[in-house]
Image 1 (cartoon, rainbow, N blue to C red):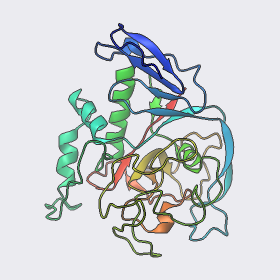
Image 2: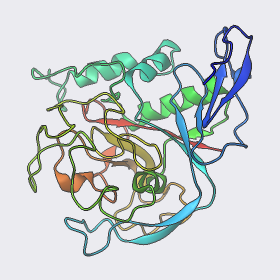
Image 3: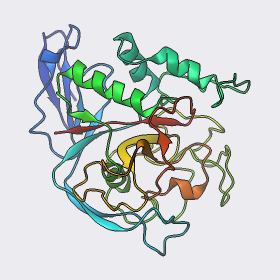
Length: 310
């Protein structure tokens, strides 16, 4: 493939399946490309430290779990959801590199997150604290409010006027399933070749290594495992991920159009996925995280990814 001349001044560059803004100058709001022509499967990255976004198709799916699904929970009632139009999802969870770029622009409070990671939940020093590494590993320890600050930074950085958001629960599960109906997108059981998972026991938690999963009691760099059918990495395992939704156990007021639930307990927000220390039932596509307070910081297994309205 011939690479475009990078000496050219600011211009929009189109490569197969990828839309990038290339410039010898700093990224700016004026550089943001139009997104209306993007098609499912296309990729979009709007600034040097912005996440790579993948366009997902409109469609419908059954959200939740069937009564016969092994280890299902009562807060996963099966119901139909329609995703009326394409949207984009970050290919990976937000990384430390991306989070720290937000901090350099004085939007994200990296210092407070670092301090919280070094404390127990009661405020005492955590003598067992371990820094898993930064760079391309997922940022952890952030609250729901911290994730909102990052989203605000992305919208400011790209001039998108609230197009970037946290994904709704429905968007997250739709993206994780990628057209599948089984407990995991690859089948009925946890497979350590597809994610950074914890112990294989029923209720046992803790680090474990098998197959491609060589990380024990720590995060893995994002995209260390194969993506799902829609090109998304780490939708299962590695870290929990915040969503936009207020928590409601029975989905009674959850919109059926894929938007976020604004009813229920909005002091607590839902998180999805499983972690490097979670047992198998927590890794399922339908599994809903026990909600945490919006302000919860310091959890070394909790981060987020972002979605984007097109």
